[in-house]
Image 1 (tube, rainbow, N blue to C red):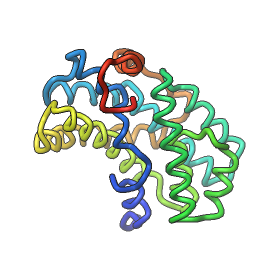
Image 2 (cartoon, one colour):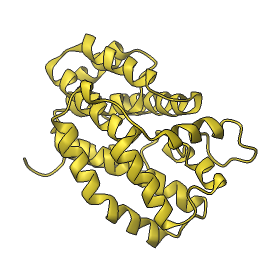
Image 3 (tube, rainbow, N blue to C red):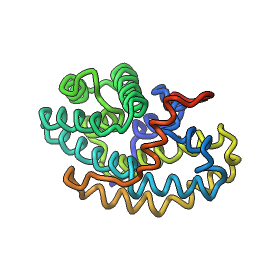
Length: 225
């Protein structure tokens, strides 16, 4: 398969200007409510998201969007983007997904242009979720599905660990420890979702969905979601 290309490292970098640092995916309310208060509870929260919640669904959507882009199925890609947006359980989670998607498309067009990605973005329209935009870019640039999916899942978890560190739930070293403990689950999730399809979508991480709703009216906030 070869080494992952430079594009993938660049797109997954915290320095890639999509504004991910501004969102906590509802984690800020979970900290306020006491659901997440230390490294162990953070690990449990992230494990639930990856095994039963938005992390798993995003991985399935990613694989479907990558395949649609690779095959040139722009109508199918648009339907996947619309489905991904509709699955957002709250206004803030929808905003998180769509704003990062718009930012990703804009900077990737400018820095890593590709005709196939331009066609994909045109097909998806202005309201395209981040996960679908990223997968479409990977497919358009000919990146292999599995390393791209592995990287996206890892970045999803790493961004939430970074948010927890900024919320003073744990220190940086313990945060990296949580990511290391999540690595086997992330690998299993990527393997499962690489071969999955949209019929496998579903979840039961209700507390995380409620957190994103409660965050909208949280009195004091560092994050936008």
